[in-house]
Image (cartoon, rainbow, N blue to C red; front, side, top):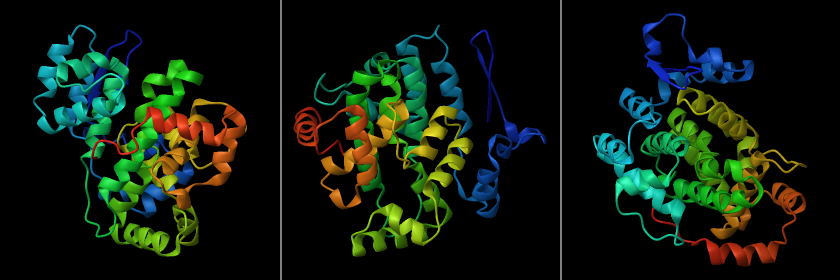
Length: 298
């Protein structure tokens, strides 16, 4: 699907496959095009349905009430359940459980809800792997989102509404790898666990880059451009305080909260302590008090 945004604020969606001139590679860098072509990712990655894009269009229509949007989303029961789940996860224990879909929609901004719809769709994708665990992957990913959502208002309040979604989607390259080669992702996980090594160290030895796969998948799944750039940089060290660097720090910090110190990239973690002026033990105590270590089952 191709989405055209007009200066008047309206959005038009058409099926890209109907036009010979359209290809997702037009939006890719040379390196991304190479990955896309060599790995035949166009055939291996699942697609976001037209119904999901139609719901996103309705979300952007300011004339529709929260109740009207809830009625539209209920037409996709799995999506409705996932939005409720994600809204509760974002709220955490601070504002109580959200029980009604209309309440969840009212709680989220329209821009945030649009990304919730897309994330819920991606979260529903699955592939055949024996060792790779979707539950563990999303448990870690959603914890990153929760950490980012907690920290972001203190530093980047204008980005706070997107922190949960963007943090949760940093590692979609691992999903892309699973669709492309489920046996390889099982091998990566087994080697990482057996040798007690970080994913990045094992991935480097096997000459794979889940960041690159994540950016290609993000283009195909119609992620926002800024999110695609953040995915591409999420394992890069930093010296400046930016929304992207805060998400990188949150990604590593989620390993600590989930008691996975062996998977932490200490270089990025130290960058975060220095740039954002955090003291590790004090932040650990603050995080444990604010964020449940065991999130709602993914």
